[in-house]
Image (cartoon, rainbow, N blue to C red; front, top):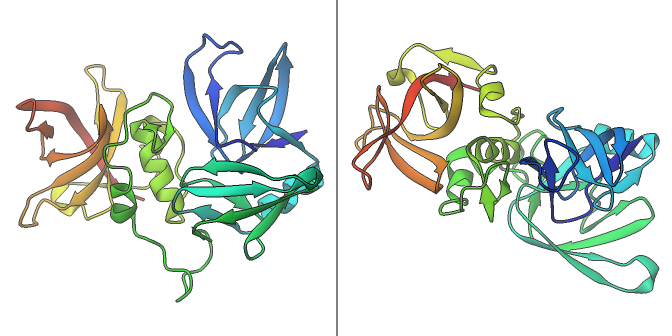
Length: 268
């Protein structure tokens, strides 16, 4: 059994309870496998990053295995701004606002289907996992990251209205055709380790650990160490912000102190 997110943003819980912490979110068009159910809750595994979590049974649309496979095998358009979807089921129209980084499955010009329901949209989207052509130029990692500036920090968040550090890196890379896992420690296991911060380039990821040596934070390098401005990083800490970066870690000029300790730098 499979499902798809048919709402703007759906909270995903660690346990089957409204009181449980939100560990991630589903954005419109994201698919998943149904694993188990408990009361009003559905245990799922996301198709994009294989993340296990619980969602409310009222907050998704079931899919047949055939439709799920079709969506998985075809190119999916990724939204690059805030869109307004229009659903025309049952001969009346409903509007659904969706955030950038959402997925439009099996897009055909300005519309697509989810089951028997037809959706039309206004806005822009890009086939981010398609080959780059003159008609499909990806926006660039650092440019995309700047779209999220001043978005408030939210544990488990993935939208401009609330996002965490690894949610930011995952969505920014997703829009640019690169798959990352969901959590910072998982992303730290991907890519190629760079020996020194001097080797890092624009768009590379920097990871930070706590006193126990566990990876707890990640950000995107905006400018390399050798640039005129020195190394700058964009990351979600309180809000999505730009701070200085050096061999020691992230330096917050407003607080006049280092807030995160640098562990490794990786190229994805």
